[in-house]
Length: 117
Image 1 (cartoon, rainbow, N blue to C red):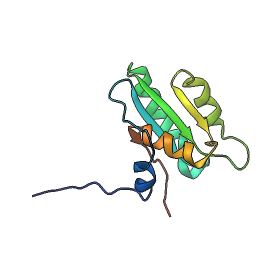
Image 2: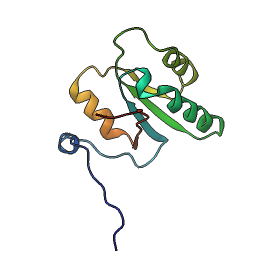
Image 3: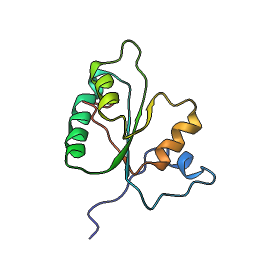
Image 4: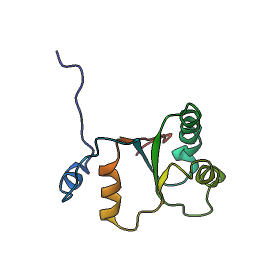
């Protein structure tokens, strides 16, 4: 009996339609954290875990997507410094197509939100 299934986020069709996209089979794990840069999205927990992973010597690349409507939370500035060698993208994607491309090229999408609406 099948105990689980994959439920695709509504962006699946847009990601599937990217022309020329070919999944990468090698290289480090590509992780994306796509959220507003606000306390309720809990970036501190995400970066705390990523720091442990980095200290364990595991190779990964980060795409930290999103925007901040006021000042950057201090944790974001610290993360940019701590993970400068791991970061591929940091901030608001310059276009919707670039946002979709980053999602499509990522292996893992992480949510640390305290609540979702």
